[in-house]
Image 1 (cartoon, rainbow, N blue to C red):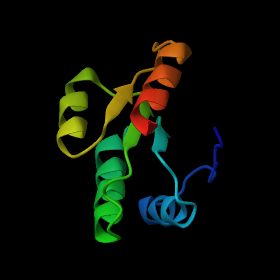
Image 2: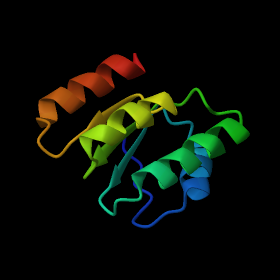
Image 3: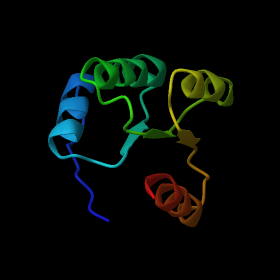
Image 4: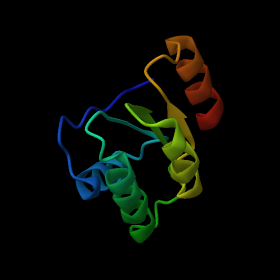
Length: 98
């Protein structure tokens, strides 16, 4: 796997455009600030706006359990909380990109 790291504090539009430019198979985003609903929602909208809504988005970070269902409803493929074992995340990524 190749990972493209865009850096901290990227705007959703920047992330979407970088993903499109690099022809990524998946976007993984980690949010610790509590702004996950807004930022991930904007990212999903940006991807759809640029006709790239088929790029799966997975999320991780400090996300309240009650927000996971809503994130999935707006199009997030999966949410991984801090206690998720790394092998579980890796297996999920392998499965979703194949």
